[in-house]
Length: 323
Image (tube, rainbow, N blue to C red; front, side):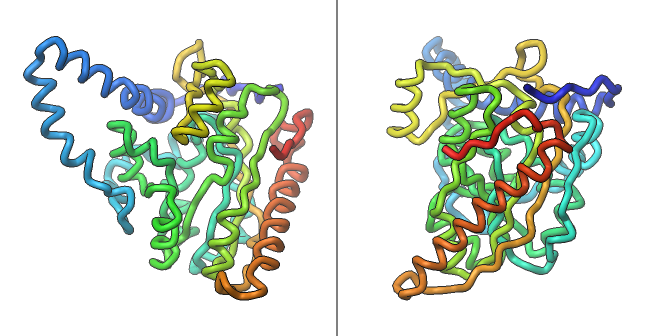
């Protein structure tokens, strides 16, 4: 049911950036606190000093600040996702860019969430920098900012906390807001039926779009669900409890050779025509009706993107399921 991996040669630079650094920063981040705790218990002075020096930066709520820490452009220029992702995956295409007005602010709703969200690399390509000239910020799950290394990479990439006040600050700043509505429900639904493409169409961001009169841009990325396999670390019941209680995922991932190295499958993002949104205050009588209209248009756009492009991009035998 999955996409076929490319056998074309890739560059060492691409393998280093996409195959190793991108997934390894997640693995290293998850292991950092346990490793430091173990070292401290064993009496390591170095571990104590590193922890003491890092804590002020870790505790500073940078993820709730806008514009945040987005930067370190030399690092992302070296990563060069425009070239490295295409070399590694074989395809790293974007379709429907003619729909995008570079001078317009958008609220971008992207699917599917996936376990790792490799598709975020698109936003650090030269093509997307030109497509969204007003700048952009990601909404990231709060747990990301509690994991060393992942926290810093997320902040430098351009992520801020997925809270309503932070999202409003981004929209008020005039920047495009990028989010993954499916969140943990989509990420943790992987593996329920490997053939299904399971989408969680939420309504919360539609309320924001109407409140600020921001057009909604829907994207769907073929390949996201195939780059790694979701690995459940806990029984399904316990996984659901952790998700509800702590709003965090217990799903890990495995790629090539059973490691964290992603599979070399083609990536293709398709962009729907923007959904025009009429602005209404929350207490306006027309507010709820407009939210419902925008949400219906958004789910229809997701369906159209998938059904129109599934055969072209290797998903012909996979059903779209709203959860």
